[in-house]
Length: 363
Image (cartoon, rainbow, N blue to C red; front, side, top):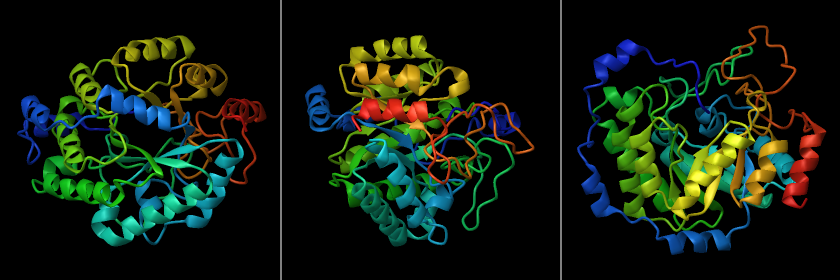
């Protein structure tokens, strides 16, 4: 979900670059002392116990963002059930799903109940779940309640970060985020329907860079405090973020990553990550106009036993059929979809892709 618009105002960064979120004093030696990362043997045992993961990043077509998906007034189990049925029909067995701390903060028990309902629906379709806690992509400000309508032809016009700018403005937020993560992990720490906990999506995006490190360090610490039975990971996504990448790769139970490039670039990325000798899952790929397609990437992932989670299942309010940097203000359908597989009625964007996915999944 690599944001090419760089929406964060440079002045904001200048003002807050010296500000450290609360409880961010932990250094790498502190983290190392608390580290409960799986051994290589534990990670490989997890891989042996799980079939090859193949699926999509999932937001129901009726939701513009994570808040609309999880808030009580807009939670939509009927659409979730129908659209996960589309995934089941082509052999997909895993969905990656974003959470948001504000939905939990507003209604803690209700939020966890809705997570349970989602997991029950997904399990009825033979689908495991990768839950994502935090995210540095797209809009930095959000609020509870009714979410905005999509902007015509603009990719992810209503998607919101978590925690976004608030991490620099509320000195008490870090403590609240710890309570949130520990509560959710403790509730679901032994749930076999959950495949992976993805702790932080694209830390450092939107030019946040190392200002994302305090939360990244802390969310791993919180995860180790609970030490769920499922693996903890935070995917690498940008080669230039050397310090963040090093921390993510050295502390994740299994290796997760994003790659929206062609097969040569993607193959090189896989080769570079094999040295960690841990199971790998690509948690974001498939951007057709970037040269990342099912036809050239999915067989590569299957051949290397790398989990394959593409961006997007059903075209909907997130507008991810449009490319990051090529808005279509008239809202017309692009000739080549950027992401997504199905239309809302379940008809495929490209039957050739469907046939390939079914072949790869044995459906």
